[in-house]
Image (tube, rainbow, N blue to C red; front, side):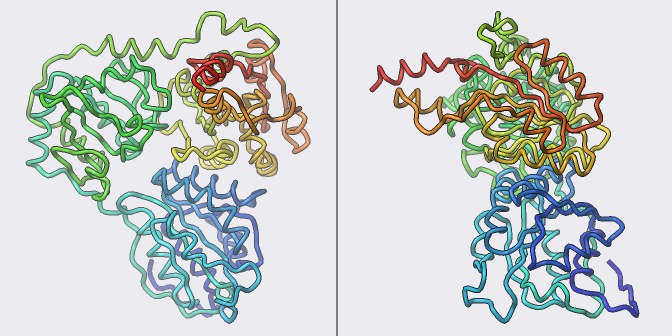
Amino acid sequence: MSDHPSATPQTAADQVVAVLAAAGVRRCYTVPGESFLELLDAFDRHPDMRLVSTRHEGGAGFMAEADAKLTGVPAVAAATRGPGAANLAVGVHTARQDSTPMVVFLGQVETAHLGREAFQEVDLTAFYSPITKWATTVTRADRLAEVTAQAIRVATSGRPGPVAIAVPGDLFGQAVPPAGRLPGFARPPRPALDGDDRDRLAAWLAAAERPVIIAGGGARDARAELVAVAERYRAGVYTAWRRQDVFPNDHPLYLGHLGLGCPAPVLEGVERADAVLVAGCRLSDITTQGYRLPAGGGPDGRSRVAQIDIEPGQVGAVTDVWLGAVADTARALAALADAPVSAPDRDWSAANRAWRETTVPPAGAAGHPGGRLHPWAVVAAMRRVLPADTVVTNDAGNFAAFLHRGWLFRHPRTQLAPTSGAMGYAVPAAVAAKLAEPDRAVTAVVGDGGVLMTGQELETAVRLGLPVIVLVFQNGLYGTIAMHQARELGRTAAVDIGGPLDLAGYARGLGARGATATTPEELEKALAEALTSGLPTLIDARTDPEIISPGATMTELLDRGRNAG
């Protein structure tokens, strides 16, 4: 950013927004607060910025996270001190666990009152440090532009993530001298794969009998390169937890999603692998099935694992690796695809078929009795009606297991899902996705528990004219917790949600369209109408609470839990 002398004094808030705009940031999500009035005003006046007022700071945080996850460019979340910062924290934690760049501004008490436990005062740097890459408090107005530039660099370099800047309420409105020349915002350094490492990895993959790749969020911008490496080395590909869109799910080398409750036949490919290349994945506990995989298949009883990651601290962090490379995933995979080796043909058809069989609804799901939809029937209706490139935002909850198995992610950047498992994500994420990608269909898939946490952001969609679809699996339960209680204790507690609730009426009360479906035919009709309505629509799909997961019923789990006790 260059000097732009002006006779009109700039405020610190004006400079902050100018720095953000120069870096390509385009949206700020917030609940307005008195401690950052001038920042709100500066965002609202800037021609390249959009200021989005949300109904809750939790929604603002989820929107900023989803926006950046979809576009790759940081978004801003802003909240006031104490209560606002606390409400925002869940979205920031999601960004941290999901490696999503985000810039957070937290209004703070006035400089003269710092440290006195003034109204709503919290030590925001201490509060946010564990859930961000970097958190700081600025105490001089003329340093805000500089700190903002540094925040963008930290958020986007290495493993991306959120940064938080706490600003006393008297700083944003202060007149400040021109910021001077700040560092530019070119793409952060993306190291290439060392030539020797490229050759060693290429020879290893070519010589393996059963090589597989586990691809994570770091491969989001490396889809073509990932496909090229898989095809060049005839390696099977798994996608990490809630990163299903990094590889085309209809590709014959796709072996499945390493998520919760992963079926045993799907895991067989990675269990038997003698070479596992981890590409842009931090190997979370869910992806590794409780830090158990990759394992097995090597001469010493364990797979040999190699890992490529942009962040040095992630390489070898949770499992031994025989080769760890700190490199940009796309550049590393491109180098591997061009390596001068030849690999034999390998037949992954059985493993691919084992995964595909888990995506097929069971017989009778469409004609489920009792006036309630089988969860599988909901996903089947989605597959029949929604465009294949629909951006799907999914919430936390047991309903998501049916979505993860049944919906095929054929196109890039079509899955927005929190690896942190945060409830309430889907509806705000859908709002942000539609803002960022207005020409694509966007569908939030959520349970009744999640929609009752942040469903009020439908009002934001209505106010902004965003025709999102919110598809609710209403089964009257906190399903995940009910499943664990039934299995472990043989009984449930505190998991009931009253109803069935008139969620379609709730949506209409917020100005959106609402529909209720208890049969596949009603659901397909509602989805088709929602796609063409041009209005935000909530579809209340009444699902059977007895069908608690793809592999078990509540009755079976309760019986098992009682017998175990």
